[in-house]
Image (tube, rainbow, N blue to C red; front, top):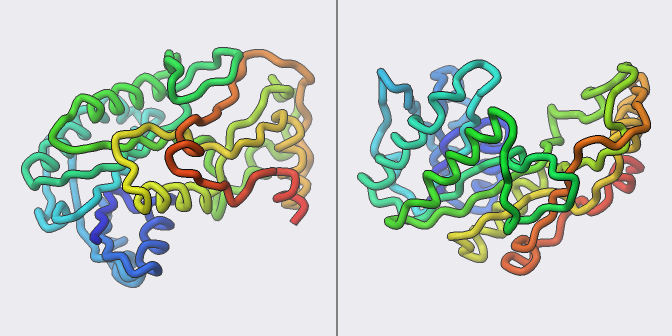
Length: 269
């Protein structure tokens, strides 16, 4: 099997290295020539790909794969969000041109508005942020395609190497909504869940990927700061807008067991 990963960033690189370790051939893309050597050193066949509207360049060999994983963020904070859908449309055009049949699109639980309830894959997300709207539009683009099958993974808040949750609020005071539940996932489970999708050939689904333990924000980030030896943040004991991200499909379709099931246990390690 050959897997092509469009976007070898924090998640894409971790996935690529795990696949290579498992004997899978991996094509990895980057927009930076400086990163090509890093990909090669990881046993990944490197490709320099540019999907900008005025300068589309890629090697067709990148799309010679059994599965294409798309992990490119919309970068809405840097003002690139408006271009995201058209960028992904160019990816779809390449998928059609080169006959890719299976796609994994990385999205986010940020597509769900804070509806003050538990939500799952059957819930209407009702995105209410700029990035949420952009991501949901991107999902819809792929759901409309019939020439290939897409599985969408909506990751919760990402933590792991280089993303220490203890640093998020360390030393801050009067942080609002301290009683709101958190919706997080560790990099190990991001990769593990993706491997389960490949193993089960589970295409045509949407998966909410979020550790099924949702402690209040104050407890989670207080323990995270303590674990990292940082200044303990102070939260306001209030519950305003919130959501709990759950999944019907992770258990029923994949039978996946999270490597981290309880954050308190993880902090205690």
